[in-house]
Length: 237
Image (cartoon, rainbow, N blue to C red; front, side, top):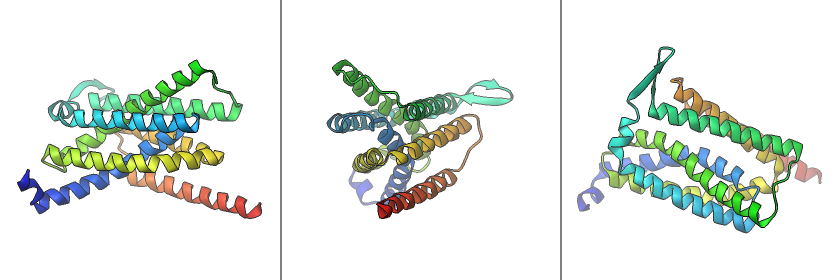
């Protein structure tokens, strides 16, 4: 362990891996902000904390199963001349889930359907939000961990990078979720982002890689335009 702390290469890989995990966590922050936005403030905070804590535990467990994670890239079937691995299947399932979730939320936002406000409905929503946070984080984790394997040689470095990235995600998800709740138009924009992310996951699962830089640039540009609209509306008031 002392050798790792005194190695410049280890510190360089930790910084690089942490930045990569934080960047890849943008998708997760958007998703978390959307799914907790329908819950009351106190319940939303609890759901976010518990969901991220469980997601962190599962990510660390996945890092201890590196040999199994690497095996996920091995082809298991072939469809229309395209080989399919478990990684591809997970990305396809995650992408379809995001498309369905985002479409459902957009429909509720437009039609104005109300959730069950009883205690049973609140408990079910609370549990559902936690489950969704954990599941979608695992989908994103598989891809990021496979990338991390090629960037760092030591599991300890990967775990440290994941913990730092999850801490940043925890700090950022609260303000982002509050901002989306205060500005309903930004929620629709966030749902559009989820559609975009879902399509990119499906494309990756089918072997058509879309550089994340293009996606994040589109998201940043759209968010910038929305910020200008918010400031404009405030000035008019």
